[in-house]
Image 1 (tube, helix red, strand yellow):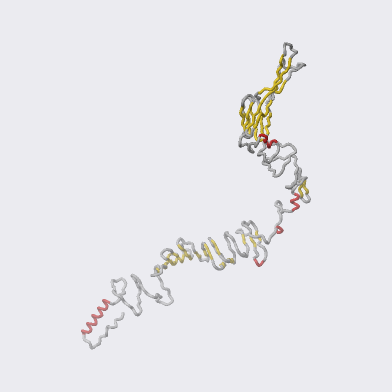
Image 2 (cartoon, rainbow, N blue to C red; image 1 turned 60 degrees about the vertical axis):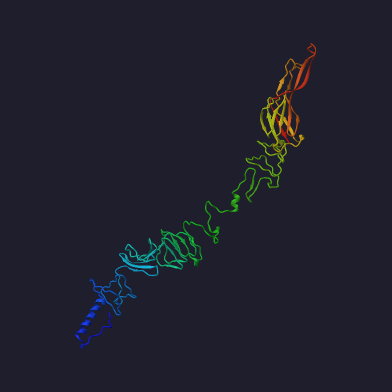
Length: 458
């Protein structure tokens, strides 16, 4: 330290001058001198400025050491730090810690939330790594093997020997000088030059490259979808033993005639002996239809039509079956209905008198007038009753028999009609007491038949 205000003592000065100068030096040593003896309790208070060089075997800064430059005392030798070095900025949030562990040196960059550790990997395998948190982002072995979970490049990647990528490799242009091995999945887009080998050593893909101007050759199973076959046709693929190519000759030869069908095996024409166009008249013997049969035009049947039932309102049909709008079958003794259709009902009046009612919702609607519909009566009980021998013998003595019942329409309206049932009678009368003087009386009487069937048509 420098004290320029302290002057030298001349030989002519008195002892008092020596004494005053000595006390001045003592005061300076007590208040302003720097003590730098390690292991003692000497303490220098206040600030000290060294304009020259300060040399010490060991320098300890209890709070901090502020300096602009730290360099080696001996030129060309490194500055050694025996403890980790933390670089904590005042304004910037990024900090650096440089440490040395058993595995090697490592630097940590942090913003107090995320840490990046760069340096030697833990475990002592001398690998260089760059990890964030749990690690695994980047690892480079001493043999030059680079391990990353994912690699994305914006330019070309030149690989001289081996590249191991456990994750995804994405590149605009990938050139492998010696070879690439492992599992390859995903979609390959672009020009491919080179061959692909199975891990067992056999070649499964041979590609001469664009310069060779030849198609690639595949050997083995190929899974996926071919995007284009513009440069191939079936002439390039040999025919198999079972799955054969189509030819017109094969198609014609594969058909044969059947029952009612003629087939020309030369030109492949099939005929059935008649034209069957939409405007042609077609003739068949029997036609069996399991489902519905719809006829858009006219249908003429010269034979017999046999069906379980016919449906329709009869508005566009002809024939008696299609005109039946309702039917009823009943017992003439008490009017009990055996079966009915179309909503017809019957009520019994006096002996042999029956009123049949036509409902308003009958198919096709009620008849518009009395002469607009017909009534068919059939299957009336036609039991024959033999006349007793004593009263009904002809001149030759043969017993006569007569039909017992008859039914007819007595009256009708648009909503109902009345049926009357009768039978014929023969009575023999004696004229006087002579048996040879006999005669027959004929007549009609009202009766209740056993069964009457009625149908209405219009």
